[in-house]
Amino acid sequence: MKPNILLSAALLCASLFAASAANAEIPQTEALNRFIEQMVKQHHFNATELRQLFQSVAIQQPILDAMGKPAEGKPWYQYREIFMTDSRIDGGVQFWRDNEAALTAVEQQYGVPAEIIIAIIGVETKYGAFTGKYRIIDALSTLGFAYPSRSEFFLKELENFLLLSREEHLDPLQPLGSYAGAMGLAQFMPSSYRAYAKDFDQDKKRDIWHNPSDAIASVANYFVANHWQRGGAISYQISAKGDAYKKALSKGVKPDVSVGDLRKLGVEIPKQLGNNESVKLLSYPMPDHEQLWLGLHNFYVITRYNHSPLYAMAAYQLSQAIRERNAQH
Image (cartoon, rainbow, N blue to C red):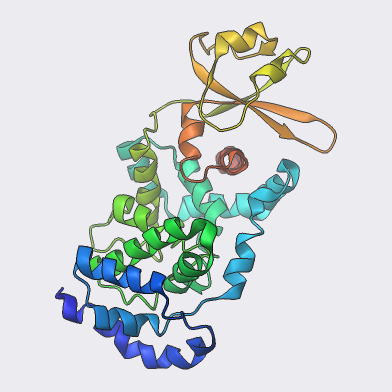
């Protein structure tokens, strides 16, 4: 698409949004000017069209407010309750039935179990029921230009969003997503969309908003790109004698201790895990006790989707519940 017409569809919509966005319009700051200059210089966008586009973009206070209240800020036992519900488990079983052919084909091709893919989509959007209400361009612009602590990250995502809009022939004023700019059933950020989204049904569109098979393949492709191990275990709940195990608790999610060292600290670990295998010892507080889990390599891969160990454990436990209930049916 030629640069001088790439935003033509957006400009047709600009007047429709101008009135509603005027009160929260992005000011013509140096940061905006630098961003536009970068898009022109590096990616050959048209400066006039970009300036007109941003006149229709709104800085939204609710987005800034939401950034201060992430679900991952809850303790584990409260966070778990958000996702381990009958409605989300049953929804996962129904999603499996509705998309069985695509899930089977993707699992065979990529090696990622169907229940893991389903659980990710279930945690992210409840199987497409809640894909977000904010325009992506508003979310990324708000956080890029009005949220200084993360501005570099979100301006990079804004850059990727404008690029994918050009590549996929999308009107950049139309796509909706989360307050952080995540999109579709899989809630991909724009950079992840450009790198990992798949056109599974080969209709020449990578549609993670409305096409479950594309979303399913995209999640699997993301995991494979982050070195998912086909057939590998994910996590084990364990127990320990005494308090010596606490020496092995540390920040982060990457496997950083050997099974052998944990056994020496009184941790009781399944026999199938060899002493030389690297794992992550994880502690999840409950109201009246502590749960101990081992995170293996594939658990770490799940955290590449969302770096929170709460998120990865919720996705894993939801996947197991969906698999068990599906087997019962």
